[in-house]
Length: 172
Image (cartoon, rainbow, N blue to C red; front, side):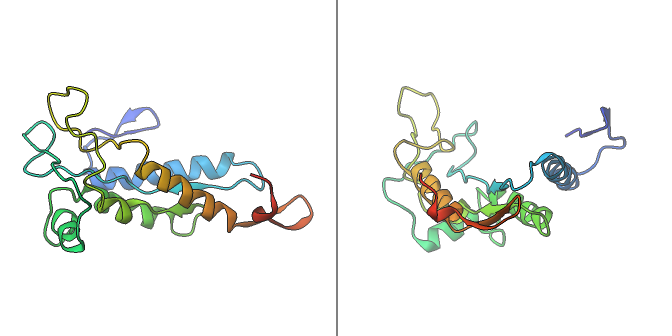
């Protein structure tokens, strides 16, 4: 993996986790410098994938028809077990560290979404391989939207000399 800084490749190449940390810090600084006063910054955590038995191009599938149990979630996503789908948790570790001390609010959808291995289109629509990354509609993404609205409603902000504006009093 090759990362660029100021338009030039970083030589010697850096490990992906170090590159991810650089990218996240750069993104946070970019957004915070350009955010208008009183703006609200949100970052949504990673959406998990649910491949079992390999990745999408290695025979992996998502045959579930019911949500996972807690034990099944830990088997597939646990960093300690090196589960098949640990990427979202690994990325989130870097994300939480990078956002610490920033003005961003975090909308953490990862863990609740890990339980819904049954909510993917799988082979629907004539696909040649299972789609265990995208989500069926309606479903999980609607839940994420509900959580976002609840989180937004709980935020109080100061705008141009007006004390606190309670977003729960604004019309939706």
